[in-house]
Length: 252
Image 1 (spheres, rainbow, N blue to C red):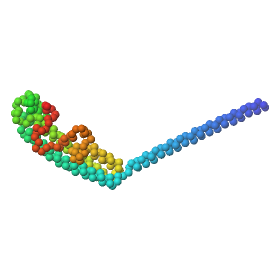
Image 2: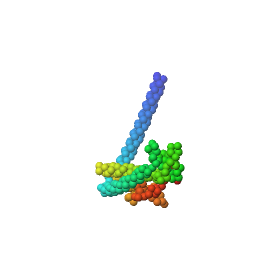
Image 3: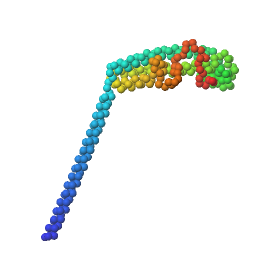
Image 4: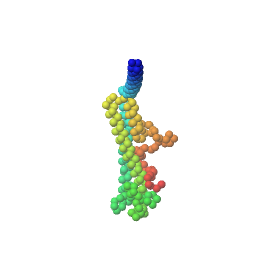
């Protein structure tokens, strides 16, 4: 009987201990779950707070430009367009003048049997065709070209001027298109102050030298200690061809 009582008492104690351990484990798991929920709630709140902050910041940045700001920028665009048109007119006149000089020289140039017009350098040692390709002596002897023919240096200088003028004209047309696009964006409305600043900066960056000069605004790359570069469109009426400096592969 005593052995049975001792055995039962030990079993009861073991069961009680096991139950206590199970309860302790459940309690610990409950605490862990509670702690995990707290961390999740804090993280969710942090995310929501950051999102609200970003949205508030974006709302502040997205303030629409005032009517006065839009009107001021529109006036700028009008001024840009006016000066661009003036630069295009001057460029057209300069292009016509240089093309006339080129045509005159081509008309007086030495002509090869295949129809190419060629020019001899001033020192009489080299020959180039109208496309700028140097010709060997077995194609034509420089001495076969009369000295009164237009020299290569004179023709090349005018050719370079024409190239610069054509590049300038392309820049002016691109700037004009950019100005039109900016005006269309303003017309659609709801332009923010930040976007207005972006458009202004884009127009300044794209502005050709010919327009910048007319606005009295020196280019950012100009050396303050040196003179402003001569614009391509500033070709003097009646300037002699010798006024043009030889460039490219003409001998110095």
